Length: 265
Image (cartoon, rainbow, N blue to C red; front, side, top):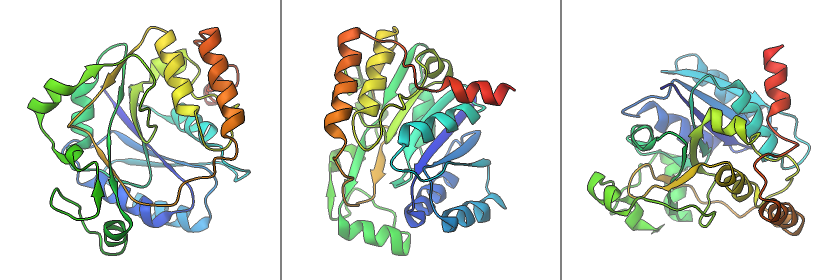
C-alpha cells in the first residue's frame, strides 16, 4: 500500500521542523508527506521549500488562507491531494520515533481505522527539543504518559484492542484508508474553532461499519508542549457532534467531496 502522511500546522515552524526531521529518520518512509497548513505566514512556506530541495520523499505544501481555526478544511484539502491508499494524520508539533510509520503500516487492517497514542512532553524538555534538537527517551525528565514510550510488539499485541467508541479520540495521531475517508466525506467543515471535529468523524466512521483499533505501545507521537487552544467554540461544536450521534449519520454535507471534484477537473 502507498502511505500518505498528513502533517497539520499553523504558524509554528520550529515545531514543524522537528516533525519533518523525525520523518526523515523513519525505518519506513511514507510515500509522501503533505503539510496541511491552516494559513501560516511566509516563514513556514520558506521552511517547507527549503526541505523540499533535499527531502527523502515527496513533500507537498497544502495551504489555505487564514480566516480563523479551520482544521477540518485544511485536513480535507490535504486528503484530496493525497496519492496514497492509507492516510496517517499527525499534528506538526510531534516528534515521531523512528518506527512510527512502520508500526502504523503493520497495524493497518481493511475496514479499520487506528487511534494512536501520545507522550506529553513538558515545557522544560520541549524547550530542549525545539532549541537543540534533543531526542526524548524513556529516562528523560519532564514527561507525562511515560509508559507510552515503551515500544513493544509483545505489549502491543496484548493491549491493542478494537474499541468502537470515540473515547480518548486524538486527531494528532490517527490513521485510516483514503476510501473510508471518502465514504464519510472526510472531516465536517461545519466545525470551526477547536473541539469535537475528530470525535464526530470517528462516530461517522463507526456508523459506516468501520472498526476502531486502539493501538497501544507502538506508533506513539511525542507531543511538544504549548498552551491550549481557545475553547470558545466548544458549545457550538458540541451540538454538531451530538446531532451526528442522534441521527446516526454516516456522511457529512460540508466535507471532502468539493475538493475531490476540483482535483478531478
